[in-house]
Image (cartoon, rainbow, N blue to C red; front, side, top):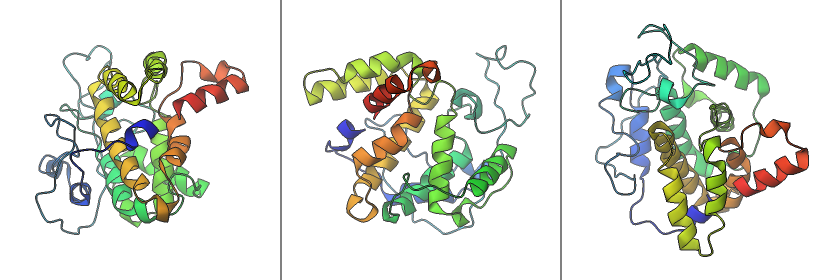
Length: 263
């Protein structure tokens, strides 16, 4: 993230796009709201076209989408069966068109708007009881007014979500390739290699990665007020995004060395 966040980009994601996600009031409305990152754009960034209206935000319940390519792996679960949000592969909880679950979209949208002005975002802890309760509510698929929650609580819950993705967001299978990309001699070669590794991710993982990097970059641009530059953000968020398989079986000093590389 430290490599990518220092690069100049030709397009930027405006707050309007993030806020437009908060407008979604029902599962039917989700299709009307523009995705954070259109899949057919060159760099995954989009521009705001509509004026955002303030509405009460509701985190929607989501259902298991059965794909024709993986029905056997999903067992006998019915098409409308609800499943937990946390601890599931993204391919299961994302929509058939790889749209992120509505609660995750809401978290990203609110943090994009409020995160830059929040000191210690992703670094400061939140009330543990409140974290567990919010996580449980989201797992149940009920309506949750995330907009009324503490910004630090939402950031902690987002990290919790990332940490519980099986094999992590950046895929444990690609761990060595991510690390090898950083061994390229020049900054530009590193960036190109990182892009190639990212293209090997499952599409839902890549979509969430683009959204997450946009959020973190946006927050780092306001480091003077929030005290969270790209280095601090990498330390707080990075280990939740990537780790090798069975890393908890390794000696602590080895785990620390690997975490440093991930950051």
